[in-house]
Amino acid sequence: MSTQEQAPEQADGQAVTDPATPPQKAVVDPATGRTIAWVDQLGPEEAAKAAARGRAVQPAWEALGFEGRARVMRRAQKWVTDHSDELVATIVSETGKAWEDAQMAEVMYAASAFGHWADHAEGLLADERIKVASPLMKGKKVFTRHAPLGLVGVIAPWNYPFVNGFGDCIPALMAGNSVLLKPAEKTPLTSLLMARVLRECGLPDGVFQVLTGKGSVLGEALVDVVDMIMFTGSTPVGRTIGAQAGRRLIPCSLELGGKDPFIVLADADLERAANHALFYSMFNTGQTCISVERVYVEAPVYDEFVAKITKKAKALRNGTPTGPGATDVGALTIESQVATVSEHVEDARKKGATIVAGGDPDPNRPGWWYPPTVLTDVDHSMECMTEETFGPTLPIMKVADAEEAIRLANDSPYGLMASVFTKDTVKGEQIARRIQAGSVHVNDALIGYTALEAPMGGWKDSGLGARHGAPGIRKYTNSQTIIVSKYHLKKEPQVYPYTGRSFKLLGRVTKFFYGRGTRD
Image 1: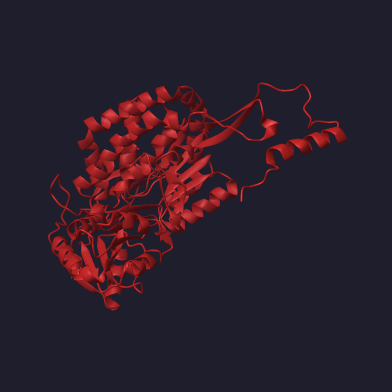
Image 2 (image 1 turned 90 degrees about the horizontal axis):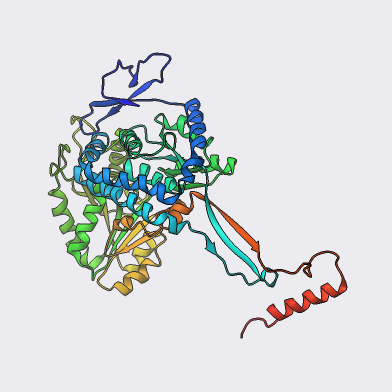
C-alpha cells in the first residue's frame, strides 16, 4: 500500500516502521527531488502468500468466460477515459515526464488496450480446427485450444509504468489468468492506482495483485512462484530472469534493450525526417527502448539535416512538468541515468564528437536532469553509437550510401526497432527487410507500437517473444491439441498383432499417399 504521509526516514531512504509491518520506501518526484509517497517493501514470504491467493481465485476468474472478463476491462476503459487527468498526474509525479508524454504514450495506450483485448481475446484464443494429411488420421477431428497458464508474473520497468507494466497484465487477465505485478521500485504508484481501479470495476479480489519491493529480492521471489514471467528491462537482468525461469522450466517473455537506428537517404523528406528523429529521440526524455538512439544520414544531405535538427533541438523546453504545455522534455526518471547519459556524451566528446545542442547539465538543479543533446562527427568507436543511452541524446553519423547505413544499423547486439526515410517507398521496404530488427518503419518511427494488432518483439539481445497481436496473448496460455475419433474401424491395420499382411497393407498406403515424390 502507499501513503502520502511523511514517515521517519533512515539515511538510505527506508522508512522506520513497526517491526510487525513491512518496511517502507520513499517514492521521489524526479523533477523536484521531493518525496511524494511511501510504499511497502515486500519480500519472498509476501510473494508466496500472494501466489497462493492468486491461484485460489483463478479458476473462478477463468470460469467467467471472455465476455465476463471483458465487462471488467470495458469498465476500466471507461474509468481511464473519464479520469485521464488523475492517471496522467500520477504517472508524471513518479516519472518526471511531460504531461503530453504521459497522455500520448500511457493514457491513450491504456484506453486502447482495455478495449482491444476485451474485443479480440476470444477470437485470438478460440479453438482452431486443423486439417491433417496423415492417412492414419482419417475420420478424426483435430483441434487446438488455448488454456490459461494459471498465475502470471509481470516485472515492470520504470520508464512506462502503465504501458510496460500494467499494460502487459491486460492480455494475461483476459486470457483467464491471475496476475502478480511487481512495479519498478521507483515508480509503483501507477500500478497501485490501477489495482484500486480494477477492484472498483468488479475484478474479484486476488485476481490481480501488486507487490512493491526491491527488484533483486522480490523479482527473484516472483519468478519462483508463478507459472510464467513477463519482464521488460535491461538485457543483463533479462538474462538472469531467463536463466531462473529456465531452471524451473516455465515460459518467459523478455523485452530488453534497444539501440534503434534511423536511416535518412538522400531523397528523403528532410523536414519530416528531422521532426521524427528529434521527437522520437527526445520523447519521454529518451527513456524508451524503441526510441531513436542513432541516426545515419547519406552524405549529400547530411549538413542540411544536421542544421534542421540543431535548430529544432535548441528550441526545446526542458522544464518541470507542472501541467499541460509546461515543457517539451521532462526530467530523467532515475538518478543513475544522469550518470549514464553524461558518460556517453563525454566519451563521444573525448573521441572527437561535436555537441551542436545541449550538453553540460546544471549540477545545482534539483531533481534529475540532462538537457536535450545533439552530437555530430560520431562513429562506432563511441558509446553513444553502440551502447543503449536511454536518455535525451541524438548522435548523427554521416554515411556514404544506403549500403553503409544498413551495415552500421545491423552492427549492434540489439534489434528492437528501426526506421528508414526515403521518398521511394519500394526501396524503403527493401531496406527494411534487410534490417535486423523486430519492427521497422518506413517514413515513420516508434508509432507502430500503437498497432496492438501487430506483434512487437526484439531480435538478438533485444529479447524473446512479443507483445501485441496473437503472440501477445497466446504466450499467456498453454496450447492443447485434442483428437476426437468420430469414424473408425473396430480394428485398424496398425494395431497388434503384427502380421505380414498388415505390413504389406501399410506399405501400399505409404506408397499411395507419398510415393509420387516431388515435381521436377
